[in-house]
Length: 203
Image 1 (cartoon, rainbow, N blue to C red):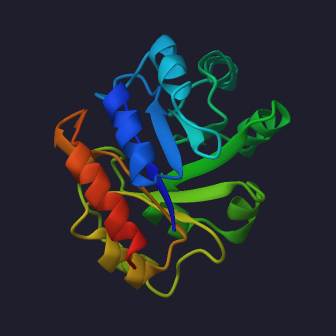
Image 2 (tube, one colour):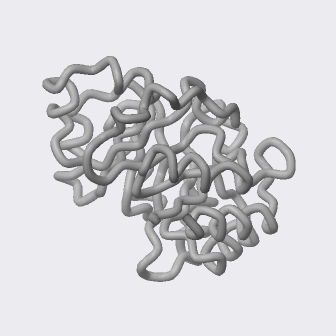
């Protein structure tokens, strides 16, 4: 089970997630998010992440030129596109040497036809709640029996007390959490980070 802890902003956040065994660390660059960090902060934190742990920059509806510039300056190796970015943006990121995660609401993905899905090729897929980062668990019943084939990542309202149940029901190969490991909006809880990673891996 691939586990990403997202929205990190402090040394303690990063160190706790790494020590707990997270596979990926996420930094939010989406404007207006309570978890948004500066390029300088992300670069400093990314330097604390050991080799083998993925660093991910999260973007939403930003021009691809801005995305690539921020990714280069911050040193992240993966970008997560969480808006209505076209397939061309994902390909531009790949051409720049970055890995890509395409993130969208589960309902939106369920309504797409095969052509729309196929346009993003083999980029990784993340399915989220309608309002990313809000911490609300969404109704995932539509994914039962209709989940993506192959590797995909589940996000949206995951917490230490529900991640095992949802993974067992939907069968993702990865999970992504942000608000579900916070003690207050935008402030992570080391204890909840550890509990989440352990719960996700216990399935």
